[in-house]
Image (cartoon, rainbow, N blue to C red; front, top):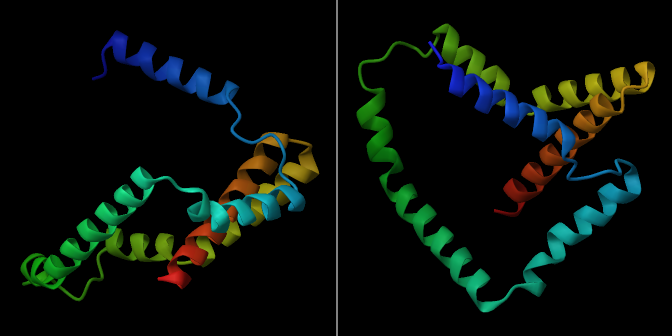
Length: 138
């Protein structure tokens, strides 16, 4: 059971996150502007940013070297990956899911006049676009 203090902390976090807005515009022009910023950001980096980027690449490469070994170790003796959590995770991780969710929230937000749902749909679509753009450049 959660303590009373934990309930207060969760309530406070939920209250303040609904009051903060990281983005107030959610139209196509804002999407294009942020897309340009996304791809032009490395040209504005300082030396420490390149250091963190290099460290991230190094850590990722190191983890990739252990990937097959870890997968073989953790996947031995398993069934044909047909359990419900695995199927749900596979469905949830496919690119169609954020497209359906963002479309639903944008249409529902526009039809009901709920700007928060419209913004949520836009943010899901934008995050999916950035994820695809990042994966396509690797």
